[in-house]
Structure formats: C-alpha cells, structure tokens
Length: 81
Image (tube, rainbow, N blue to C red):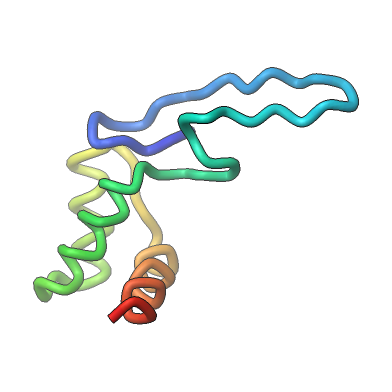
C-alpha cells in the first residue's frame, strides 16, 4: 500500500524471476508520498501531539501512522535543520 493525499492505494508489483522491478515514479520500499510525510512533520512542528497526528491521519487518509513512524520522520527533519 502507498499512502497518498487521497488515501491508501494498493499497488500491484510484478514479480519477475531473477529480475528486480523498479518504477521511475515511486521509490522502492516507499510507503507514503513525500507530501504526506511533509504534512506529518508540519503537524508535529505546529505542536500537534504524536497521538493526535495518528488520529488525524486515520481521519484524512483512512490509515493510522504509528507514533514511531512520526518520530522517525521528525528525526530526519531535524537532521536537515
């Protein structure tokens, strides 16, 4: 699944024997669009608690983002600051 601003999208990836498949559009192992990740970081930086961000993601996109995921995204953001 890929979480987008429109909700979760189920992707079917072809399984090729002996060949790895990569798309030019979506990074390998990517679970969320970058705009979704940016929104999560902005919510947290605006003072929204990690637990509240979890509830908001379920309301907006139909799937919860774990508190540990939000913490990991914030660690990445602080590295760039």
